[in-house]
Structure formats: structure tokens, C-alpha cells
Length: 273
Ligand SMILES: [Zn+2]
Image 1: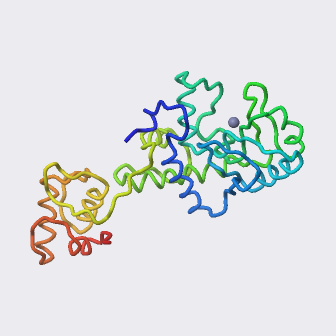
Image 2: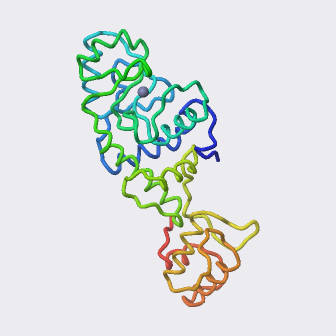
Image 3: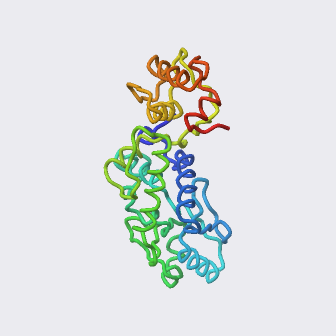
């Protein structure tokens, strides 16, 4: 598992796994917020997420039609994970990155910016179609004039916060879409390949090596909720959790073997598959 803060690879493809989870969650929060652009006459690099807000997509389609040429796009929508990576490269003087806004501050995070090849060749047409060239310090970059960075970014940040909270029930973020230092630090400590999906069916028990993970944490919380004293809800199935499981089983006329299978899970209100 590689945390975002430890990624040194230049390509934003290194955070593709987490990106995909954030985009999927954004679509859950706000369906049809983003429109795919890979059905247009464009060539997209491997790490490009082919999404823009709808008005930006229409303007792009118009420009493509006017020039009648294929456009090569090196960056379109960028999640806060991709942006955090670029910013870290920029701050560490890696990957010859000359400009990278902090996460949440780039119009790429608002799905209303593109970085393109042959920027000069496209400039006149893009300018006439609602796009604005950023300037010579970032010559590939165009912003769409209808972009609403704040509202898109709020949804993107909330999507990340919800994903973090699902994976880290003992370190909850306020899922308010506000990108403060607490969220930034969790973003840097998120796995680049995305959060692991814990199968609810793993059989939990006191064993060596000790079982650890979100599913153990949820069990500990459920035991507490059921009125069983449990000293530490630390996501580690240690001796204390074993005692608590057995106490719960005894109280519910289950064999007190400390093994958390379907019957125990159901009585605790935990997912069973
Ligand atoms: Zn750009």
C-alpha cells in the first residue's frame, strides 16, 4: 500500500485507484454532474479522467467542430488526490512541474479546465467558444468561463470524506465538503490505489497474528452498542475483544466460542453476506 504522500512517480496514474473511487462517489452524491468527453474528437492520455462539467463539454465540442481537427488533451478533470500529488511534486521540485495549485484550487478540480497540445493553434477558436487561456506561465492550460469550482469542489471533497469515513470509522472526518487541514492530512495518508474493500464475510476471532481492520473496528463498536464493555475500539482483535465477544455470545445463548460467524454477526446487526 502506497500513501499519497509517499508517491514519487510523476504520472497522476499512480493515484488512479483512489481517483476512480472519488469520481464514483461524486456520481452517487450528484448524478450527472460530470459529462464524459471521450466521445468527442479528442486524444486522451492514459491518466486523463475524461470528465468535464456539461457547459464546458458543449463549448469544447463546438471548438472541435469549428477547427475540424482532433485535439490532444493531457489533463481534464483532476480529483483532489491527483491535485495533491501534483502539488507535492511541485513543492519537492520533482517531475519538472512548473505550476500546480493546491488541491481544491485548480479549475481542473472543478472539471472546467483542460491542458492541451498545440495550445497556440487552438487559442483563437477556444477563446471564441467560452474558454480562456491562462497565460504563458502555464501555456497548455485553458479555463472554461462557466466553471463553478467551489460547488464542484465541495462535492468532490465530501466524496473523499465519505470514502475516508467508511474506511476509517475510528477517525471520522466531518463530511461537510470543506477542505481544511484535517481533510488534507487524511488525503495525504490515503492509499494511492484506493481504500481496501473489506469483505464482510471474513470470520473474526482471536488468533495469531491478530486480525486488524475496519471489520474488527465495526465489530467492536457493535459490541459496545450491544452493552458489552470493551476497553479499546482499536480495530485490533486482541484478548479484550475475545472476552467481549464471548460475553455477548453467552448473554445471547450462543456457544461462547469467540468466533464471529453469521449468527453472532446478525445479532450484533453487522452485515452478513
Ligand atoms: Zn492545467
